[in-house]
Length: 217
Image (cartoon, rainbow, N blue to C red; front, side):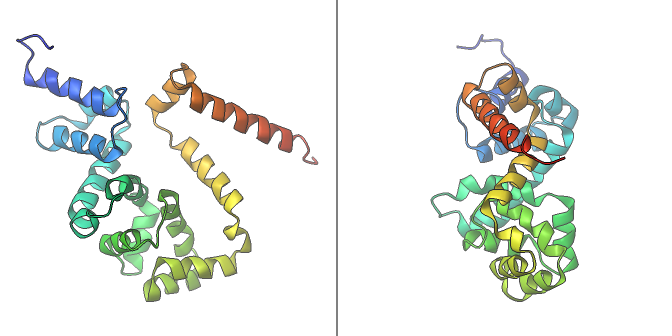
């Protein structure tokens, strides 16, 4: 379909847009793979990738490192699992500086993190954010070193009863997710390209507005 004189750089630009912003529902891991190839093998700079993908430099760096960790550390051991490639967002969440510093402080590594995911101790991407809370609690921090993520979460639930509320845990996740929403996702919603997400946000706003209006000042 392309003109015969289309050069490799132009083809890469088309591939990049199709993977990161196209209509096809590509797996996020495959999007990150394309980003990694263009950066590592095709010589694209972070500035070029930023302008073409509308991801921030920080997001691009997170995706690159997350792709490396997942490809080199997780997939060789747990890649046979049916949903293995769906775990990419877990590794993006892991790139939070407080999480990585907390892991280093207690002598844990990316291999421990991969084990928690592979064995089902960490079941959802948002559960990765709980690592920050674990490292803020001395007893929970001891438990994660002694017997893993699940034991640390149980200990944290005892120390912070409200922590075990799935509703307010979800509220925290929504707040964090909205803060970290990619710019191209925001544009799609604002411009009406994704009506279902717009509808969900409107419903969320109505439900919150109804409750907040009942607060006593």
